Length: 460
Image (cartoon, rainbow, N blue to C red; front, top):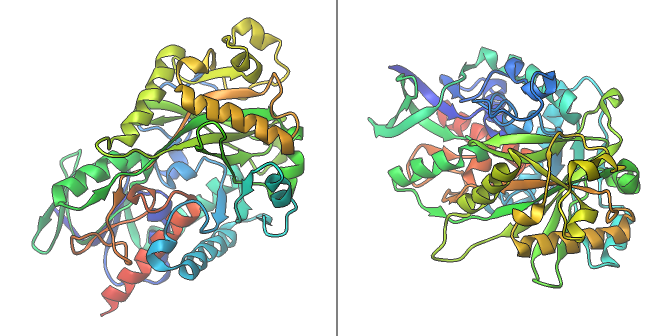
């Protein structure tokens, strides 16, 4: 058994920025970070190498796991805002939350070799255009590095923290138990480590594991939501006037039919659609590169319907998984359908896809999303597409592509205090795995926060 002062479980955005801040402050104490994925230099999806045409469910999934977490290969887009992306401000205050996110932004820019524009919706005419059609543009500042530059930034941060933080990869934590005023953790390899302070930062992909740890330790969990929807892909020219202005537009609409909230998410100008493997379930996402030589002719974004359940149902993630599994069953992975075919109640076939003017950037199975996505959510999505067509004519074209399903899993919200500590002394929960944050910026900010708090503790 090896002893450490602090152990971080998870090398995603929260764990990385906690490690960075510990290193920058030269925190007194030994620190270990454990992740079930690969080191950053080995995080290569076989689809990108051309070795396989579609997702083959690698374990671990290099898109979802490893140093940098799910955000590493997912566009490098950081939103500085309290309006979406989590509720960190409810724990530490709005000004402090923004201050921490701006600090994260400065750190990223410091490690970046290029120049990246900081977009803002504050002075955009888009908000007025949206309001004319009952669409609501959320305020945010957005920094886009692109998947390629984000990867290089994280490689430099990885190198920077080596002097302070020990790292173990391809290792998962199987057991957490309290012992001698600290914590004993046991890995899947049978190794044991002891620490005084334990930071759970395993991200969304570790949501089930965090829930199990909390239940074992008697920590309160509150049911959270799950977002279900599709990834939309269309010619970049359709949204160019919007993406050139604000890059990332978070637009929310309340549908007339069900009064449900639908939102745009993760807009990627000239980007590509990608598959993700979350706990063996294949879902869809998107990203974009900074380097123009990797640009495509399309823009993609998600349309998500929020689903919050009431008692007695508590298994929101399982609900989302069941829908994704149905898509996997019918399509062998991701399903794809032309919007025109969906409207007409017919499946997209290979024959119809050959006539499609929008060329897909992900090899997916042409099919019928109405056999997968529940009618209520699908009606919401169709209504939102027609509404977006008002501000971006062409969104509702016949050849707009819909990929399904896209699911955003949220961990059951872990009960933590203003220091992100649970009811168990010395046990902290940060990042998206806590259910408190839902974005790269807020997850990273939570890592900085916890590092500063523990740095102060170990100075005394």
